[in-house]
Image 1: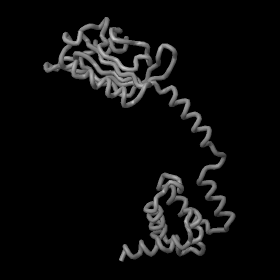
Image 2 (image 1 turned 90 degrees about the vertical axis):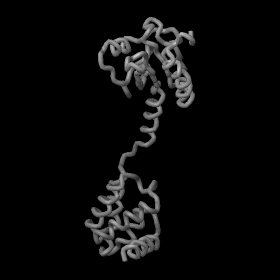
Image 3 (image 1 turned 180 degrees about the horizontal axis):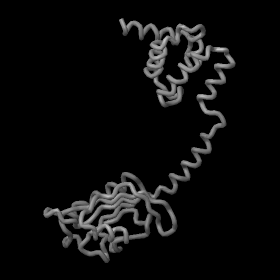
Image 4 (image 1 turned 45 degrees about the vertical axis):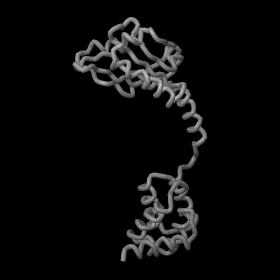
Length: 216
């Protein structure tokens, strides 16, 4: 059968295997030949995802797409298998030298297990108090000036990530922003910022020295 294939479609067969091996057993990759709609699949990897094999026909969605005069690639759409598993799919149409559509390459990724994993992670990461509320509580407990509290909280919010994941450069940048806003003119600011950034007060002094040297 391979000898009778359009050479353009034939060139896609190694790509089918390559994509499937790269993304694993949950990634079905299918190559369709539009010259034979009743048995359009000419190459497939991980066919267990949808239960199809070489010689299986084009899907109803595929047939509807082929009927359209202007065919555009369909990227990142969702679907379901016959047994209800959720798929994330993309269909890329293949054209010949005359710009006629002759087939398509389809990727169907079974993301059901990923959804289950996400629910597990969401449960594990669920907290009763978010990070910004914890900072506010610490401020009240330490009687730090409310103005300083707001400055620090807003500056941290701009960074968009928890302090635990910040690099030294990001912490220096926070200290720089706080210094520009006059935060360190407030009594107790050094100790408070050190606590929020999980560093020593001497580290904050070092950050300030670096910043002020660079600004000279």
